[in-house]
Picture (cartoon, rainbow, N blue to C red):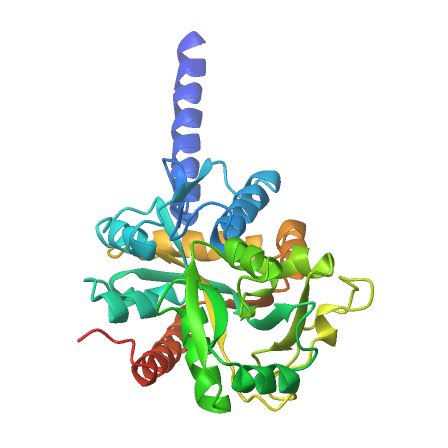
Length: 336
């Protein structure tokens, strides 16, 4: 009797093992996940637009439980951001490092001849675009036409504040000179916030900060938004100042100054990571773009929402790289 029960038990156990093995064979292996903290690398100092975006992403990931892995923000802004680029290049095969990239990835290797190319990294996604605005002091000219006329009539070049020599702000300044015939003296500062402070204090006549960098002084009525360097206006229509929304700012082309420039905000992993590791981050940051934190940040900072991945991202990067190289060459900023 006991022997009969024992045989039945063994048979049942064997059958269960066979069934479990069959089920396991049909179940796909668990997708790759990070095993150590995710490091969002910022190629700039504290408080800048890239740092703010990194901390928004950190909060969005953690608040919405998008991964169990901790997320940290690492500031590597030394050498005008070159520190971050070399750090990422040297991290080949490490899937815990994610760079928040902007036009620096094209411009710095050209102007400083550092041994870096964005193709050394693994593209993840483009998550936003920065639009730039021509700002002057609230006491200054009220329109682009008046601003250009004042710059032309000035006894010395108008002082234009910006962030970083031979970078986006500087390139825009050079092209304003070429389009208008006015003369500008470009003064690089450590951050967009410092450039805004200098404009409020009337130490400069203008700057081309992105919207977020001049937001508070615009809201306070200390600076004036003259035009946006894009083919279309900023979309957000909620009032920011007592009288204006971002959408109320005309394009520079509307105002007779046909200069356009958009700056990417994109994410990259180091080179030589696996397809599974790349796929994890593509999925993670696509989920980030659907969070309340991302949507609120886009509107607050007046960024242009976009999400590009895969072949679409590569196509964009190739075209954007060619455009930036052309602009840098025409401006005379490419190191020989």
